[in-house]
Image 1 (cartoon, rainbow, N blue to C red):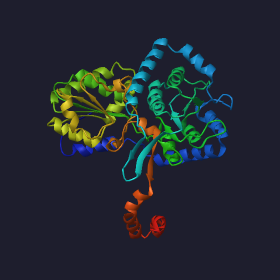
Image 2: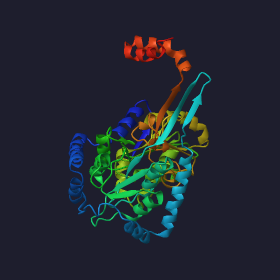
Image 3: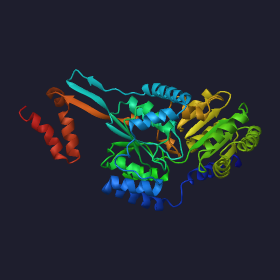
Length: 431
């Protein structure tokens, strides 16, 4: 864990530490992914079954590729009822938050005889990728599916890798069913993304793909972008905590660790104007890491991409945070709402000592699919907006067009687009 006293070089040091987290051999991965995508595009189900055997050690066919109602019913029997209720409560809170994001069509008519507006239409078909195998991510199902449901997407298709017995994790199935997923297919990796992008004999083609995954999934989404839309190409997770002397070092350390446990590339950074707090948090990190289950991952993550940065003031902490543009930002100061207006770049902002990052992962309501690797400077969290498209509406009568005809003709001629100008002229030739 780096312990840094702030200086002019700290910006560059932190920036390099964060953005060097991508693998060096991206080119090698991209070539592998490109061949998988092309194979699925050309050979459909046949390629899907081959990759299932090769990567997941599972043999599937046209009948077993799609999850059945019987499998979903069986999943409910295997999942603790209390967890089912928690999933329902989480889904309810996420839906209520995203309901407030809904956009509606609008029209604006003028006395001159013109009508302008905007038509909001849901994307018809959306694919959701959910990690599987040994992993269990019902929260990922909720966060990716509920904004699509609020947007009124007609068809939501989920893909997730099965285990070696051809089974999907029952908790994942329960979450998908509770959220109203229409179809679920047992396929993961780059081949799943390709199947959604181009369609196969069994898996339908969609118009947009969302959801997290490993580097092969991320690069496959990049490869098919343009054939379909995607949410983003997510990088390793990160949290930055701005804290002053009022913060509880035990809480701060716990929150840093909650993010560091994701994987060895995760980043956890404390920026504080209190050297005493920094030292206490450092002690707590060591103490708490010792009894947590993912100790090896935590230690590597903190050693490689963790930092405690001591600055001169909270304003300097804000400046550093805005430069990093963290995926998750916690503000643990005496008056966090006074700091909030100064924040320019962050995926999700957590205010106060009792708003820890895991609250946002599961139950708060806002989406936990967030921009990473500094992209919060220009990207937003996943939202209802990601599942709609907007069409402009223009309707002018002859009189309204006549008021603008000379301006349009001159504009078109200035751009040497005489056919554009002619399109206007022919309507008024007899005047």
